[in-house]
Length: 238
Picture 1: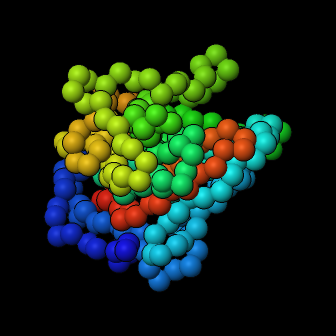
Picture 2: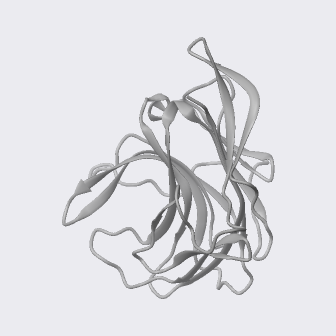
């Protein structure tokens, strides 16, 4: 079951010479029937985020493609960049899934553009996902997505010995965290083991809002059934 929504840890971090206290927020669904604030849900492409048995679930079928709409659903939380410490969750791709959908988590800097309606533009990203094959993959983007610079594929090379895969039905814990004593580098872990450590990312150290959250990507007609539990994001209190 997901834990209580806020725990303040008596640990001080120094940022710019000023001590700041770290806090943890745990998503609380054991007393909820729907996914509510601080989550922002993007479900226009079909699957929905719901609450079942005290956990968040992503379930449903992807609809036919729409113009200027990414073929994915997301549940997002917004944090100011200097406050971000880490984001983690337990993820289970259920055995009744056809294993055709990409599932994962992301940390984005982004904005909305008015192009035939609202369209999201990614200005910077670090993300991790479980691929259709079960293999974990990483995607990193520095700078905005444009026609000349499209979104990169999920092909960031992982160091030898860090390749990981997770079969259907096996729960795994993903975490994206700012690396200790840095403002511009991030680390991805799976079940506590380091999967990837980024180089310097200029967008990560800027004083802008981030979107952090969970996503599912699939083609029209494909179905998804995923359980998400023990969601925790850590931040520095203002």
